[in-house]
Image (cartoon, rainbow, N blue to C red; front, side):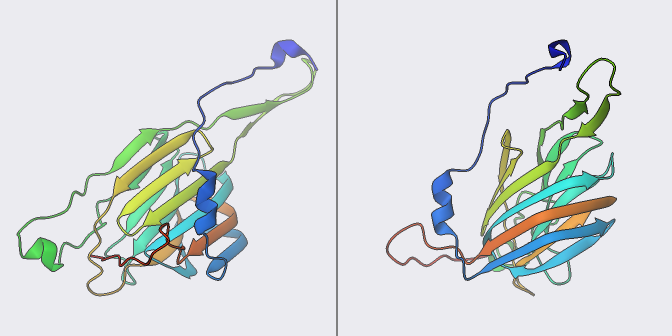
Amino acid sequence: MNTSLARTIKTLGVKPLSDLKLLRNENAYEQVASVSVNGSSQVLNSTGASFELIAEVPEFERGSKVGFEVRRSSAGDEVTTIVYDDAEKKVIIDRSNSSTATCAVFADNGVKPISESVWGYFYLYDIFTGASKSDVCEAKREKLSFHVFVDVSSVEVFVNDRFALSARIYPCASQTKSDGIALTASGDATFENVQVWTQPKHAWADKRTVTTF
């Protein structure tokens, strides 16, 4: 290999605390080896207001959006969308429809929860193959690797072990539980090794009651 063609990219890494694996409920686990999504949403069998999700997206249409819908009502009127926007080079937590604001905590006080999107810049690297100058170098975009945690009103997103983003959401779940989970893409996309753990174990030894909105 011609070393003049090689480059090592160093950056800060960020990933979830490994101890969080201890909270996984193996009795509430779903795995999907591979699924194609084309300009729509693919609802998973798993449901939950609190869960951990891992998924890889090795192939998706350039310039499109790809990600997940969480805390999703059956009618789709209440949903939080997590996407990588390839055109804008952003990871976005879209809260525009996170809450219908019909529950008493909002309606009785005449207030609405924050609905602005939260986002951060993220760029996928193009990896060039080719052992020497005489070889034809082809660019291959690195795959997307998502690691998502949702805990009732908390959303945390980790991407490719070098990006993290979080936000609070306030779904009312007045008509349905708003506990659906879906894969979504604005163009052609392939999701692989999709894993979901719902009904996580309590972080505290004693039992505690969590109030949902």
